Length: 136
Image (cartoon, rainbow, N blue to C red; front, side, top):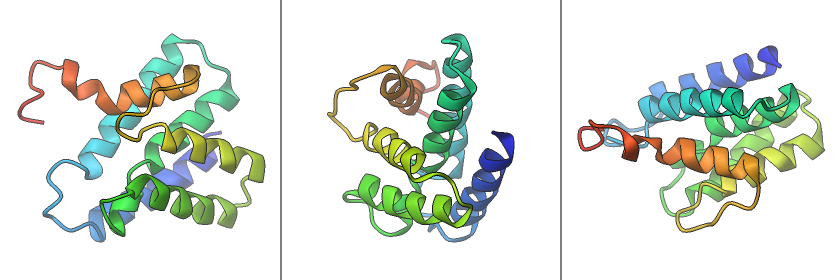
C-alpha cells in the first residue's frame, strides 16, 4: 500500500507546491495534508482493511488536484487527473473507479452513501470542528 500512496503523495505535493497559484489560501497543500492526516486517523479508528484504507487515503491526496485546472467542478477534474496518475503507475482500473467515487463524495451538498464516503467527507470538513477553524 505505502509504495502507491507514497508515489501519489509525492506527485500531488509537487503539483500543489509548484503549480497551484499562491492565491489559493484554503484549497492548497496544507489543506490536502490536513485531509490526509484526518483520513488516516478515521480509517485507523474504524479499523478499515488495508485495501479500503489505501483507497480512501489515495482519494484524500487527490481530492483537490482539480483546482490546478479550475475551481468550478474541480472534483470531476480531480477524478480525471487521478485516473491519469493512477493508470501511469498501473493501479487497477476497478480501484481507480473507487478512488474517483470517493473524490466525488467530497462535492458540497452530496450525502455520503457508505463508510468510505463518510470518512473522506468528514476528513474534508474536519477543520470546522477545530477551535482555530476561522484561521484555517
